[in-house]
Image (cartoon, rainbow, N blue to C red; front, side, top):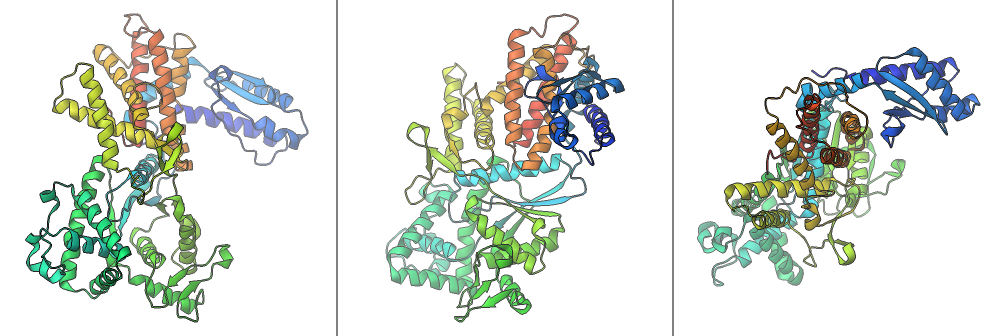
Length: 601
């Protein structure tokens, strides 16, 4: 059970006094924001409320800030050491040393629960993320989707919500038909083998498997799809045959469904291998073939309600003028559905199945308009309200071009970088570095290199704001100094090494801070971890956690460089407690990012 922390209790009392001060002076419902100052020299907590209320009261901001500071000081609130007013109108508050001693004690007591809160308690959130099409190996774009999605699952959970993660398996349609054709036509062991599904059903051994070609399943699938795509574009006869495959699949022909299942099994095997490597989790996977036809029923419902309109050629169009959105076709004139039609059906299924407060979709920015149209249509049909739905977009992941510039990936130009290739490259470079340093290459070292590579890649992707376009740089991601996940891991390993050397020392005895400065500021920094967890929730972006961890690691390493922790002094217990607390915060932060900590390197 998470109770109010000492920091929350003290800040609450300060806020109440400031609110009371302004209410007494005639300000109705004043908003008081207590936040961390840019520099701890200027206080442990600060507020600009005097600046915001000065005009309303017709007073000079600095004079008003002095009045607020005087009011708080006279109240002699617990754990307040001093209060200062500074120009142009800030109120800076300093806590006493006993306050930070209690903060340290809380961290050591709560451990993995430190940073968690109950702000979303009782709410159920559903996050759809990483829904790769089963016709290609997954690339860096899928990687960012997955890491953003999974970090949101963990962030919202830390804020008290019940979080469900799901995905949509887009397992039907023309793309899958191209995949099937590519296999039939280009994976034959002999050119004399007929390109016929019926023949494959009785002579499947005459087609290659991924294993026989020495390919991973997802690469095998990619080759089949690319071959089918090229045939489709360059040959009208083949195009008709591929479109016929779609019709035969929809007619549920057994031979076609057998091949369809055979190809998807390879696709799922490849996806699972990559996603399990990342630590991906879904509570439910929705399969498109199970619900895609239900979308047409909702279109008929919309026509009956008069919210859609049928065009002269028979196609059905939305009417989204009330939402200031452009309209979109829901059914083609031949009666076939589109993606939005299927998405309407799936959204309705989700609302009924989950009974959740919020449905989130982690999807790239190119789908922004489509998602707005979907949400509007769902509101028109009574499936849910606009505020029930949220599109969580993210920036593009590009390649490092000349002068470090951003170069967008392109399937057509062959510049797509696969997830496994990125992780493999980082792992191999880390392993080579270890061997160069004199370590013996063995299974244990390879496993360590894999964990560090995952940390490097994940941190590099999650470090920027999720809406920012980023250039992925493998070399930078594995640096042992600077803004990297490896640097954070090394910092955590340092804390654990110190604690092992100080084993047997009692860590529960936390003397008051010996002095202000590096040591005191480090503990002050640690108390803001819960704030970062809340900010990550509010902005739906884990970059707040990543950036904060870099700051903590920098402060800890600066302190470590100047301080002898195991010095047998009366402050040793306290310094070990700080070290342990730093380790707790780093581990909790990395956990939200989906990064496994390492005890030693």
